[in-house]
Image 1 (tube, rainbow, N blue to C red):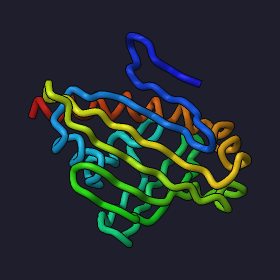
Image 2 (spheres, rainbow, N blue to C red; image 1 turned 120 degrees about the vertical axis):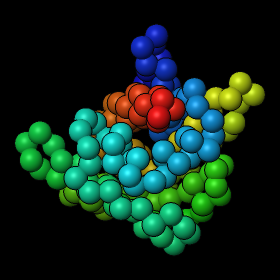
Image 3 (spheres, one colour; image 1 turned 180 degrees about the horizontal axis):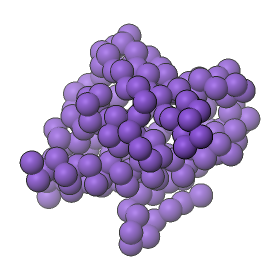
Length: 165
C-alpha cells in the first residue's frame, strides 16, 4: 500500500496497526507548521477536494479540533479529536475520530513530525495508530490512504501558493 511516483511524492505504508504517510515539502518548517495547524489554511487543503464545510482548531494540549468534509452528494463527514501534545514547530499528537457510524467507535492517535531539512525543505511524517486491526482495516476500506495522498498533494500546491504571496 504505497504510492510514490513522479507526480505524487507522498509515500504511505502500513506498519503493525498504523498507517504512515511521509512527504518532503519545498518550504521551510515554520511555513509548513503554520499551514498545517491554522484553520484559515487547513480549510483550503484538508480532505479530498473542495473547501471544508467547517474547520475549528484550538491548538493547545487539551484543545479540540473539528473538520467537516462535505461530499458531492451534500452529506457531511465530521472528523474530531483532542490535542495531547503541541511542540511548535516540531510535533503534534492528537486523537482522531471519524464521527460517522460505525467508524465513530474507534479513536485513533495521530503523531505528526516536522523535520527541517538542510536545503530549506521540510519532511513531514504523520502516523495514525489504530486501537485494533478491525479499526485499521475499516479506515483503509473507507479510503483513508487515498485521502491522505490527495490531501498531501493539495497541501503541497497550497504551500506553493503561500510562498508566492
